[in-house]
Length: 380
Image (cartoon, rainbow, N blue to C red):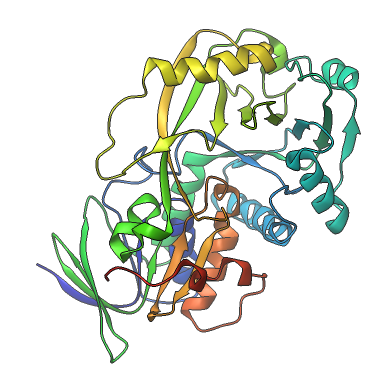
């Protein structure tokens, strides 16, 4: 059983963990990444073929600088790997003027000078015939939005990390974390013991139990579906990503067909889940719930169901991220709880967390994500 020492260890090698590992290795640190599966995999929160990228951020303007930095870093990763990771198809937000989805996006766009257009219903259906907006709604079109190829993004960060000297331990489960008064963190797995000066926990839905923070997070099992559409209006060259505020308070999101189908889901609509236990396929009822809304509001993308998969959201009470050192263990840094909207930021999160590991100031506003607001753990 190996017993090794590193400058830093990263637990969880999805979008944020892989990006953090890359930026640490790039900075010249001796780093180890651990994942209980073989990433990129479909058991966490970083799968699903494609993910939405946007800048006119309805959740809060504080995310905009991070989104801008992330896009620069995605392009940098594209240049370094020779891969196309980002597709600039644009983004369409649909809702009533008073809906947070519209008012928040408009506020962030105006605060940060993000290019946007406001569209009436007839303009939406003329320009983007895949969609059939709800009555009394308007559209906000964001030309800088688009799609990230999720699996390639995770794979690229991990490949670049190993090329820069990072070590990987996959299919290996962390069983315990010990924090010592001398500043050394010991990570125990079923296959080894690893010591480090700083530990980064980017374990998504597994992080709450690992850190004793079950009471501070809400893990839900969401459904993502793909439909075999046949209309050109739903294909990537003709169709933006979308977020549509429904009259019952839910939000439908869609991504265009890149060859694997028209992707859709209902944001934050899943039931409480447990990443340790929930391995069952998506039920027909859950798939039909998504299909019903696609047929109604994005009929151009509707067709036979090709696939439905589960995806875990790990959310805080305010649905803002949890990024930073733990008060009770400052040499342990949490990079998790992205609350269902974190993938797009992965390289910027990784860069910022890597700077925290090195005790350097972050170049992005991270105070809103302070882990102190979560409360003390039940155990560690």
